Length: 244
Image (cartoon, rainbow, N blue to C red; front, side):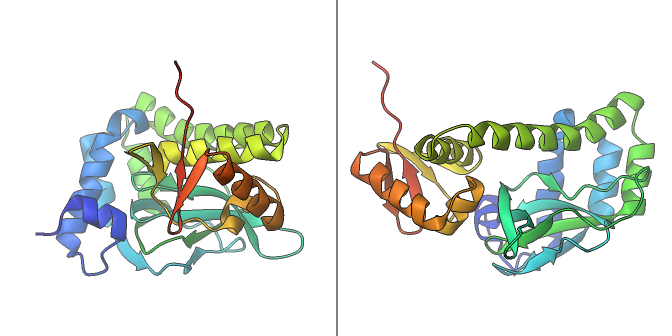
């Protein structure tokens, strides 16, 4: 039988829907306290969720699409971007399994999204309509509804704070701090460091730290020579200095 770890890591396009929905239920239950969700709210979300598999690089929604769906990463990794001045969307965040993105609220006017979402690797995403989210929020106790709505505001505020703080740092420190943030979400301890278990190109890192690819490539090269990072294929290993 396919393990849930395999589902989370690889997306598994052949995953039977009952298995995937069971995993979705488990993820929501695990986060229920943080999100303010009740058992009935979780069941409503799982019952109404449309599970969609996305290929790596496939657009989930664009910056001009109308806000109609709330999304939840069941497996894989989703890349959130915002429009750049000279080219397409610039990556601002990678969303791991067990997290919402693109939340829609019934009290907000419908309008175009400010961000885009793309499957960074093969991903399985659960989606529910704006109307379903309205019934879920309406069925929560006041404290639960406040916590769920506050979740999206806290996430946005935290991301904005982190990006503003990064811009005040030299490039080397920006890269290290961003790698530490990625390690918190995708890190796996290995001998000598933390494997950031998501494929990353130099361009991905450059967009996350608001720098050019060439400068980030030179920075990563310097970090490798100094023993702060190593490469395992397309994955980065962060080597943190030991505290004596």
